[in-house]
Structure formats: C-alpha cells, structure tokens
Amino acid sequence: MMGPEPSRLVGESTAGKGGPGVRANCIVLGPVDTRMTRDYESEATERGLTLLTLRPWQRTAPEPVADVVSFLVSQGSRFINGTLVAVDGGLLSWLS
Image (cartoon, rainbow, N blue to C red):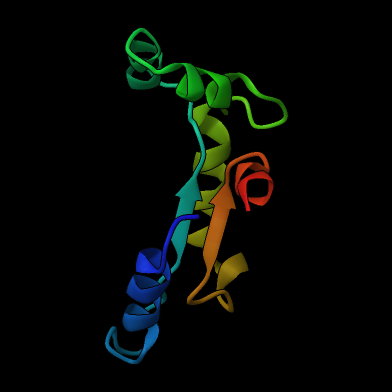
C-alpha cells in the first residue's frame, strides 16, 4: 500500500553509508489526532472520513508515536536497524 520508497530509503541508509553506530528506521504513521487532521476533516471526502472513523485504527494521540520514537532512540533498540515500524492501530494490515 505504501510503495517501496520508505523501504528503499531505510535500506540505503543502513547499507554502511551512515558510518559505525548509525542506525536508520522508519516510522509509518496512521492518522494522528492533531490540529491539522481535525482541520482536514472539514474538507475530507466521504472515503477519507470513513477511514478516519473506522475502528480499531481511529486516530491515535501523538503520545504513542512519541513512545515509539523514544524507544527507537534508546539503548533498548540498539539491535533494531533498517526496519519500518507501523504506528497505525492496524490500518496497514487491514488495507493489505
């Protein structure tokens, strides 16, 4: 659904180009509840509104996204490299 671009970007970044100790991962977001997405609702198409309101992937708060970022920059993720991490409440699995 999202195409090869994130995978290619992460792969190129992890192919020894970053130097020792450099890791590259990509966070793939679903709808996040922000002022921008709330403003978008007023202009959204019917299909877009449906995607924004379906369960279990209703918009997430920004905090779960921050939790994933915090983990990825911590020592706990030191062996995670070249990965796409979906923070979307299951949306990508439903769309595939």
